[in-house]
Image (tube, rainbow, N blue to C red):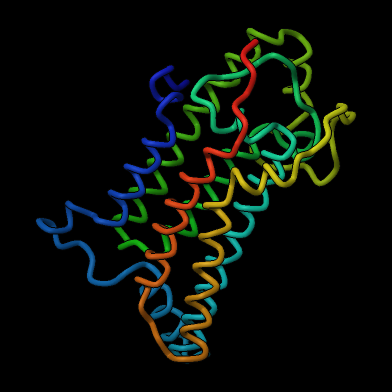
Length: 247
């Protein structure tokens, strides 16, 4: 199961469309599946246990979202710092050399795992049917993209890459590095710049937690506004990320 060249080239646009459908749930206008967003459903479940009140339960659920969003941003920034933000954002696959440094010593696909963790965070803001749709669809897309990239890299890099795949896990990271570190210097500033959208989402969740804890304001539109603003800032930031050199 591997992605087509079209899917890889337009992967960011495809992700955006999937997230937009998850947030808007157009099918809900006819099917009437959902009455409240996922975070409220989970919060209500916590309240029904009788152990916590609504305010505390809301903060607990949002903290889970913050953990997912932070793990996603941190993992993708770590990977982009070593791989290069220009390569991460490029519409073409790159297989000029193998990077076995940073997170790539622990797992083969930190960028895709980071995206899926990010999806879990955003799913809390969606209606349940939108959250399920988004998690399943993004998961399938990540699997296809991984399949496409691994076939491409195996063809370009040959036996060294196949040996690398034999010892480094695809998705579940090993606690200890599995391969010797390649000589790659991380560029943390560009890594952060390339993933500024992810950090904007983390900040949006934090603002909402403060609004809930300090002011009792339960308006998730605060986060959604932050997500949209972060997306806009990231589009501007892309102009400052150096383009990868063509081999």
